[in-house]
Length: 534
Image (cartoon, rainbow, N blue to C red; front, side, top):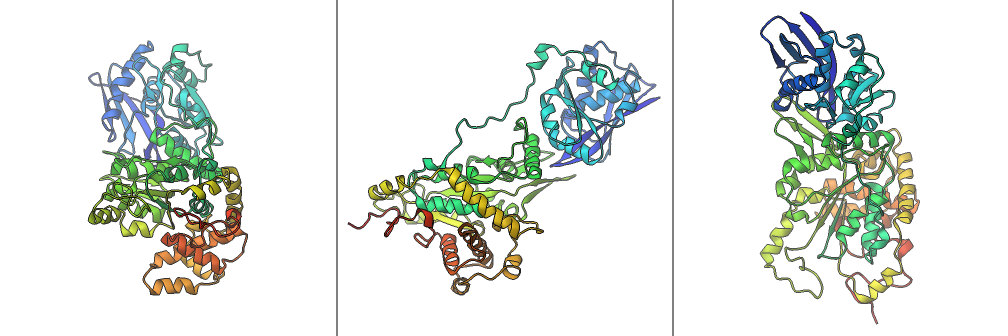
């Protein structure tokens, strides 16, 4: 009996497990047996690999071939084991070097004609190999740039079986057919030609300020109001206000996108991601899931960035309520009968909603066609626990003529706002140095209450609690927003006005001191939806 082994990676969520692919060629009837809990797509690798080897002019063993994927008790899925299976079988036949396989991890799918095709999750697989001290990985040439994001790893991209055999024998790689280069390519991530700018939003000064505060402290935001007032425009421009991700965080984001099959751009993209699922999205597509091995959902795709739920009351209430635990933990655990998958999910939630199905309830000068009970039921589709996890609630109303003219002259581009956000984030990074947090919106409530100076005007929070307007979680939310307001103003301690403004932003009170001083006009400002006094 001839034995050989190769190495590949099984992904359970974002965590990778090294898989030892063993091939044994012995006496017996000519057949190929694949064991080790493979799923259907992996079990079909027997036939794919046999056809790929035959297309390269190499004869598959004509005796019993047993292929074991160890650890055998771990479920395995996908077609990314093809390269390791072929390498182990060819090494057992003596056609490639066994020694060169000892420190090499192989990830990739084979076509029947011997071409190597890309698979999902190459980046997290290479990260797992690097953690286990492997220093060489062989991947499809289409995703070699993705694998090269991992420092210290020698990446070899191959396009067909002939190149794989040459690499495993330490021989020069033959040139690839131009037709092979044009097939099986992965979809490239396309960035917008023109970044979305906050200057495009006409009016809504208070809503723009709420967006700036949310960006500065990583606060969750609820924008509510009638259709067409700019809720979606504001939410889409929030990522442009956020600072770049740290290198480690950007690598984790890229790993999630690789696993989701979204493609990874050339070079590490450090911009925060943005996800906006449609309100018809299922639980599995938003939270994550799958029939056997779970895949990341929208909340994980938005990890490190913004998750925008437009028309939030139209989402399935079960989907919305499922956000509660990820909002607190920053990750989602999806259990299956045999494994439990973990995906990071530390996102900034932005909800947008209309006041009723027709969108005109509580809108000055508009006639709502909905019955009062319909309006109430529509509002109740956002449950109390979800609303309690929102830091800032902002009402948007249609702009009247006089206010719109004034607001148009005050339009400020995203770059100016992003500079203020970056300065506030730097203050927070210094404050939370040595803690698990980097922004006010993440800071623990006990830390805010005991380790930091007490804000001025704390009695306003106590009165709100005694009147039942603020839950214990809401107290922490108000303190976090107050600290963000102080950071934007350059203060080392929240003032009484910051606490009052944070309470107003928590409850969505219009004109509660939430308008930015830098944008406040000379003289009294007319509230949105009202004419200035003549």
